[in-house]
Length: 237
Image 1 (spheres, rainbow, N blue to C red):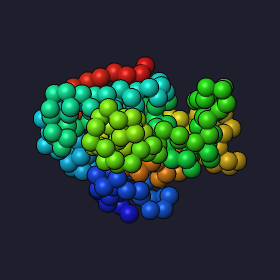
Image 2: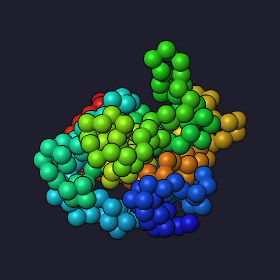
Image 3: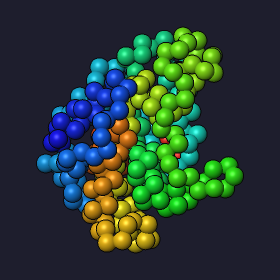
């Protein structure tokens, strides 16, 4: 699958709420350089996803790993739709994760193979290191209730999958993956013999379904604001 096909498939799967079959792509989203090149970035596909017709656009930037930010995104989407009356299909939400928050976009394969919980020091309430992306899977069924007050409805589900099904696009920073891969190898958390470049390629081809890889997230934040007119919300720093 080439770069164009990978992004197009990911966008379709986000809309459909489906999972990408198989774990690995045949090409590396964003390319294999430390710094992503324009030739490796399908800007047209990016524009189609983040620039789709909308009356309101909001971007959430997250760096520190604080899962409460997912509830903030859910609350915003509920407020925009139920409180302000914006149609669901006219609300565009982009989640700009980088730094430790890039881990939201990593599949269980990545979490387990590279000990992401240990790498970032992510623990549960009991102090145990978390070994998988427990924030990914939907908790409630899609469209089980039209009542946003129903705790078992899709509107109170803060999972990444449900937020994606509701239209949120989760971005993955290519630079963060490359830099973290070097640190993972340095800390001895990668399988013996793997190079940083190999770790980065492995991570980038094993992201969560629908993840959209972008060049440097701090640059993408500027593009989303200046070119696509996304309002800005800083959640975790």
